[in-house]
Each structure stands twice: as structure tokens, then as C-alpha cells.
Image 1 (cartoon, chains in turn yellow, purple):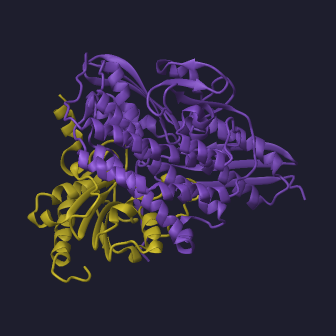
Image 2 (cartoon, helix red, strand yellow; image 1 turned 30 degrees about the vertical axis):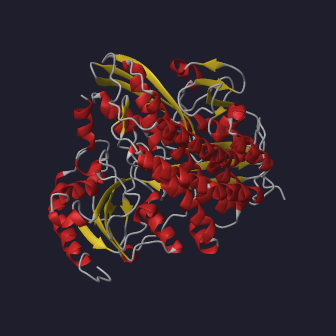
Image 3 (cartoon, helix red, strand yellow; image 1 turned 45 degrees about the vertical axis):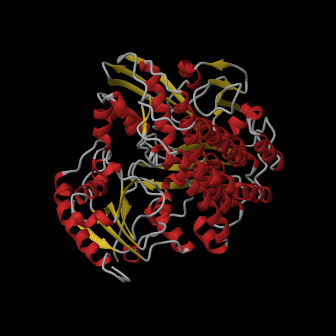
Length: 182
Length: 430
């Protein structure tokens, strides 16, 4: 009974807990909440990635909604690939690969609550403290709905294989010896 | 010059599921409106729980919050265990307490350093602070890292724990891990001392308003899990009687319920705990309280952050004590304790970083049929508004931006839990 009920919520990507000491130079970090519809797209991509042998040598982490904790999750890695739902004002399922510099976001000043801190704020703080990985690539996937039930909408689900392929291409570059950048 | 008419409308937060705003309207020296609007999210999770197997509840509710995930999971497990007659082992209780200290340290360090210290140091936020005083922010992150690693060793990860389950754990730390953590905890003492020194130097606003303070209480320990509900106005309630304390009610202008007990409002959180449970604090925490001039009963809500610093000292020392106990006992691999029945109702309560958290489940044939979760921020809302009502008339002679800052700092002192159950990025390419 325990095993079955545990497995239903902790199968796949959810097993990828943050590691306290990096086992690789490369981190693939999924952000978002699988209980909130398309917000779980990062975890779904991570889940799909784990069937590929290319990820055997990298750390896969399902980060959930860690806020500023993201900063600590990134610490100690040379390269990081972040998977997250992103409202880019585009059609649902559209995805973009970009660096933090290209995102053009303005981090909030954390005026009201730490609960409001997200990736933009964590990366800004990490940049100020110079603790970020040498390269960070973000895959943003446009959600259709961030509602109150698990599961991706069709267009977002259909975007998953293409993002998986793109991430695997990134890994080929990142894992090359003496790679300086992705 | 007195400002006879002031209108303040602070939109703190704008995000997918809502926002938190302060609205203050003063006309001709009369306070017409003074409201705090913060959306209440757990209700959606209550609905999500219905029909799910009882073993999933802690995993679902740990997703309510990215900061108090262990707190929600623990309260959830205790509710389920009380409903189904599950008796956790002594080892489970010890590990849960240790795990809880990890979360308490993590959250308090974040709040004190990242949210409150920038105000008191006169910088807008932690991001400029990281540039002007990186050693202060790096100290905070160093302590936060250890707190997170402590949780990870016990429950798999701090944000949305994996290994906590009804009746026990699905994973155990090794004694070697505990020995390593103990060494690191001991090495953290100078950072905690430095934290106390930092807050000794910072000047908090001198504002006092007496209110009722509510916290969980045990006579023999500084209580975070279980216990009974205690009030600074007198009175004790069992956890099953929580509704007699919370008395939720609706107000017209907000979707979030308010709470009241023996007065119109009450406060939960670190200050309430220190006020009610000062005697049970570790001697080093009491010394920190003395250094920070915090004595029960303290009625300055801004001192909530100071109470958190005192709790940082307590949790560190108690975490060292608990690791010693666990190392001496040795870690035994235990199967989770089994339920005595599959139908029942139970209440679980924990004092999480922001105050007392209640989970109440009805379970039928192993499936959750009803759930009620009352979060600390919901209980504090009316109290924050009452503070604002008392504060605004006293500071009307200040400039509007100063009034705004005082109100923001007041809200920040409570660190309201504005749901962080999602953090989708907002990106606009140039």
C-alpha cells in the first residue's frame, strides 16, 4: 500500500533530488510544480531525458519551486541547463533556448515576500555573488494553462520530444573535453 | 507637517495566481481604509486531496509552499497518522524533529538576511546587499546550505521532501552522514554568533501593540510538532479543538479568511512562540535573546525577526543535541508503522517558521474525503491589519514614502506566505 501510493507521485523525475555535492560538471535542473498543469513541463522533460544514455554522466534534479534555493542548487556546476515553463507571450507549446542575458527580465526586488523569489531573482543574486556556473542555458516552454491539476495540455506535451532532442545536443557539446562554453 | 490625507496602494506581488497588496486611505486625518489582501492558496490543494490515497497527502501538500515544504509534509503526516491510528517510532520522532530544525534554520536565515536585513541596512534588497556586503550574504547562504543538506540527508530534499511517509521514512541517513553533519553544525556556531551580532546593531522600529499570541506548547521541550495549543491570554486546547481557536471568518474585500480567538485578532510565529515558550528555549538561545533585548512578553511585531534569530540559535543547538542522540542510538532501518484502520479523522499541527499550521483530514477506506488546511499567514492577516490600524495614525506626520516603507516593513516582519506553488518565468525578449 505504501509503495504503490508513494510511487504514483514520486515516480520518474520526482526521484531526482538535489545533490549536496555535484557528481558531474553538468546539471540539468527542472523547475515548476507538476500539480499545476503546464508548470510541470520541466519535470516532464526531465523524465523523458532519463531514458537516454547521454544523461548518465550528468546530474538530473527536479527542483520543484525552490525560489532562492535555486542558487544553491546551481552551485558547484560548470554548466547548467534549466527547464521551466515560461510566459513568453507566444503560442502554447512554443519553446525557446536562451541564456539569462537574453531573457531581458527585470528581477523583482523581493519587496514583499521571499515566497515571490523565482529563477530571475536567484540568478541575479548569484551573479552579484559570482557563484553561478560558467554557462547557463534556459529552455522556456510557453504554457497553455497553469491550473490546479496534474498533467500537461496537449500542445505543451507535444513540445517535449523536441526539447529533449535539443537538450541532448547541448549535452554533446557540454561533455566534450575542455569545453569552455555550450 | 501632518499629512491629513494619504492614499497608499502597494502592489507587492503580481503573479499568476494573485497578488498581495496593502491599501491605506486616510482622509482629513481619519483612517478610512486599511487592508491587506493576500490570496489564500491551500484551499485548492484541499480540493486536490479529495479522492486521493492517504499516502499521497504529504507529497501533494508539500507542494503548497517551496519554503515550508517540510512543515506542510510533517503536519500532513501527523493528521493522517492521527486519523488512522499510526504510532511513529521513537527514531522517526527524533528524525522528524531534526529535519524540522533544518527547515526552521533555512527559512529563518532566508527571512532575516534576505528580506529584513536589507531594510535595516538601508539597501533596497538583497541583490544590492550582495554587491556591497557579499560576506554577509555569503554567510547566510553558507548557513542555508547546511540547513538544506541536513534536510536532504533525512528526507531526500528540503523543497518537497521525498523520504517522509506515513508512519516513518522510506530512507535513512547513515551514522557517518550524521557525524559529518554534526561537525558542520558545530562549525556553524560562529556564523550564528555573527548573526546575533548583526541584529544587535540593527535598529528596529519602536512600535508596540498588545495582542493575543498563539503557539503550540509542550512543558518539556520548545515545541514545533504536536503538543497542545496555548494562548498568551490563557487557555489550552487540544489539537482536535483547533477550530475553537482559529474561528475563521470572511471579510468582504478579500478572498482570504481571517481568524480570531479570545480577542479580535491573534498572532502566530516566532515571536508568539518565544513569548509562550521562552522557558523551553536552549540556554544559548536565551543568551541570544538577552543580547538582542527580547524578553517575553514582547509586543512589538517588528521583533518577530529578532525572535527568529533567537530560534536560529535554539535550532542549531537542539540539532546538535538530536544528532548526538541519534548517533548514540545508531540508525536502525525500520519499516514505516502501519495504520490500525483505514477510516478516520485526524488533526496534525506543527509550528512552522511562520506560525502554527493545521492539517485536518477525513479518510474513508484509505482515500481522503475531506481536508482543511489553515496556514499561519491566514491566522496573522487580521493581526497585521490591526497593527496597520494602530501604526498609521502614529506616523501620519511622515512623508507618504516613509509611511509606505514602515507598512512594508511591518508586513515583511511577518513574512507572509504568499503562495509559491508555481514560479513560471515571465520573459519578454527584446
